[in-house]
Amino acid sequence: MEVFYYIMFFVMGSVLASFYCVVGTRLSEGKSLIKPGSHCIACNHLLKWYELIPIFSFLFLRGKCRYCQEKIPIHTFLCEIATGVLFVISYAVFGFSYSLWVALILTSLMILIFVSDFNYMIILDSPLVISGILLFILKLSYYDLEYALLGIRDGVIMFLFMLLIGFIGAKVFKREALGGGDIKLAFIMGLSLNLEYALMALVLSTFLALPYAVISLITKSNHEVPFGPFLIAATWIVFFYLEKFSYILQLFY
Image (cartoon, rainbow, N blue to C red):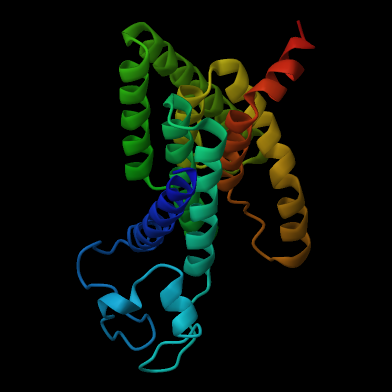
């Protein structure tokens, strides 16, 4: 039965990842999610259902459009594999529990933000809103209204804290220091973790972003760093390793 669940979560993750890549790309470009249907971005040929099977279609087509032979971008294929694996890890770590559903929401949001922020420097509002609503409903379902409202409180505090950092950064550096999407994402960080762990995730995100920032400074003329992927990745890491971060937190008391 465990093997069945592993397969189920992998398939679910890979299928959703294919959808997330469409959402992250089309909404960032201001396009409709419905029209046109899935198509080759090189020749615009509408794809058949068997050309849309996550992972397998890419492998069967050998990474090329069967109509124009143009190479298919590999990032969707990699996202499908990564999301499937992360969904399986989520189930393996948490089983069927409150933490599993939170982990799946954070994983989904992470994939969406990686697609939109790395490619377009945008964190879409709709995934943040949907994630916030789902997290609130989970807290209500598994715990109670008080616990859910505490999560909202921590989310608001994180939002205001990041807003302050962005304001100070803009004054000091005479340019936008944090994007609006990063500030809104801080609300999800506070809602999914409690305040103390959300702050730890914020600190961790700066360390995660540092190598990318250094490489970007050396190799690119545009030195803007998409901070969202590192914020959500740090949130994911802290959530999965709460016990270890709890031990670190205790050292400060």
